[in-house]
Length: 393
Image (cartoon, rainbow, N blue to C red):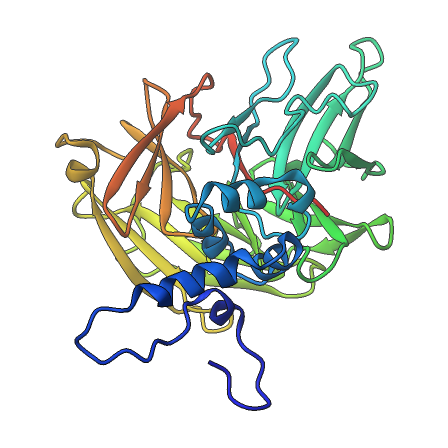
């Protein structure tokens, strides 16, 4: 309980009050009755206000308290105030004549994407998701085949608002386009257009700022012959890529700060130059790196980056693939692929190659859950699945 002149913490509002019973004796029933009565007296608005101050993991756990709390937290009218978590994946694969597809990871009747085909974007024949960042989606949108007109569009699937980007003017040289957005810091976003030469080496970047409404040019601040994998992460104002040189490279959203963070020898695995098997992702505000061990391919190792400034890697987990899949001899890329890491808990998403079965693995509890079958095969050259966390504001 808070002392005189102190405000109670958010968690203390939901925590049962201290009981005066004697140590060793069971708590009195009237203690629980009074506690339940106190919670029942709270209005919906006050409960939602309390939930809005909790971490997203605590909000998810609060759904299990009662059906009433589950309905309160899941109600559309309250989503703008409450923190959101991963709700599924947008597919970067687009079949002829089909729109984008969304694969939900939520059970029950919860749907955080009312229009996964993104049909609210008008006048386009095809809409292909390119990147996703904190609730915003970057899409390449094409009009009818005769005009061959294409636009890059940034949209919010939850609010169905969008913005058409001006043409950057350089298309044939683009290695990747990436979206950088953090609503906790600013409502503005940036889009990176990373350029390469004929030898696939990165040359420079074009950066679009939604605040300025225009593109700016920046020279490559990494090594002159650097080559990148397709996977990337935007975290704490920095864009991260895995390079072919056994390193993670970063650049800030304005293209002013460039850095190369070497991997430890135990983290780097000799892999083919077309492989994209190592996973980098952000979870709980930290950059994670997951890959098979060099001397034991049946073990996955999970590392976290201590900080961008220190460049120090910290070992976190070893995962036995024989325990994970129930079979010996399973190999990363050949038998399964790493898709993403959950942004709010120690959960990894995996696809069984050949079966296109989406699984989740809880690293804390050692439990595997089958989510559902996917229609699109995994392509090791790039990750076709974009993690999506809805943004209702």
